[in-house]
Image (tube, rainbow, N blue to C red):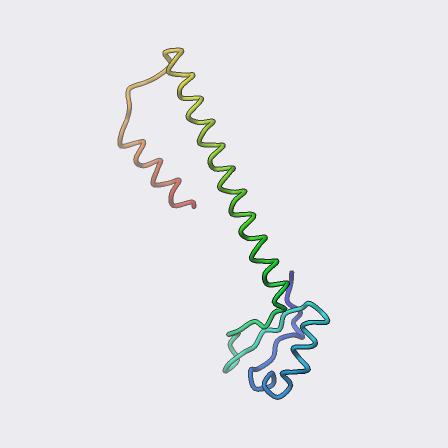
Length: 107
């Protein structure tokens, strides 16, 4: 969802027309950005739409965690299969630590 640039108002303007603007948000389902001293500070959004966004974020986080777990399982299974075939090399602990740090920094 994109914010309509026409829906950026000062907090003072919002206070003057609060009831009308809240009704506008309900009707259009489009949030209003409120500014204080010219800086965006607050977003006024329809409660149901906001909850829908939160639900979607939580769903995506769960899906991402499932994908990460599946990838980890695949990596473990691959390692077990390689070990069973004798395709293992001596552990380079420092390289493993470095790889772990790199992966963690990407999260």
